[in-house]
Figure 1 (tube, rainbow, N blue to C red):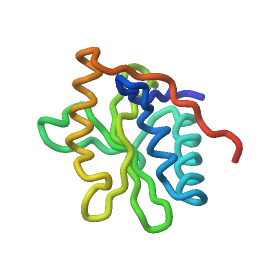
Figure 2: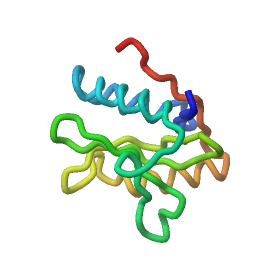
Figure 3: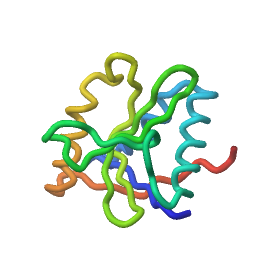
Figure 4: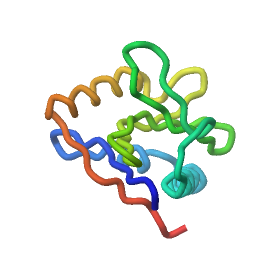
Length: 130
């Protein structure tokens, strides 16, 4: 693996991407997420269309990982921590609007919480059984 993935962990120990993954329907959506992340960590360089910068001054330094499951666009908002290290802050779907609503606001709050040591992050363990 060339990339190491981390996920936001709230003050009460909730792991953002693990929780979001569990909220996805069992079957193809979860499998597509797992496959996408397994493929991403093997790449030396991440490029569009798999990753795009979020637009607007408030979002400087934030990016979105992008894939589809069926016809539904899926996103993980986050940022690079260092060389080949990526912090995933929130997962969502995006068809006209983001689900969960307020995902763009949440990514800003979570980034600030990490910066202010009000929350932390932990390694994300890839699902390897597929």
